Length: 122
Image 1 (cartoon, helix red, strand yellow):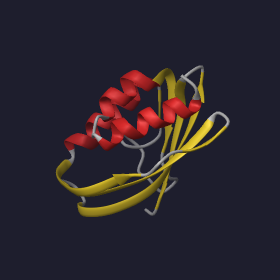
Image 2 (cartoon, one colour):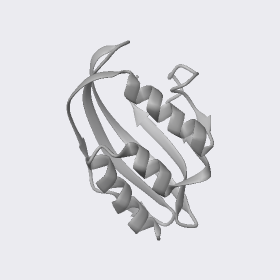
Image 3 (tube, helix red, strand yellow):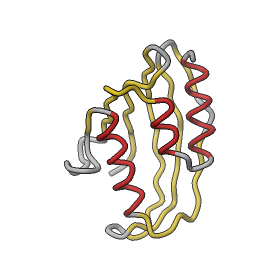
């Protein structure tokens, strides 16, 4: 898949809430996930490797009490890079209800996502 195809597939899977399938299908084994500088380290912080990214996703999902809404924008592609605007309005066990908007930036190499980086207010 080229970058446009990866971007469109990721957006489609995220809109369906199929984050684990997206990681399994679209991410490279050596992918890196980067959060904002203010984000606490640990299970939801910066991680390297697909196994760590998948565990980060499971930890995030297990912390959710209820999802009240959310959206995934259309991808913007430039070369090996693409971005998506995403939002989620959710109640978390440890934070209560949070309405979050973020810009997610991805890099694609050989048809797989090798980097994801998230930009949001902390």
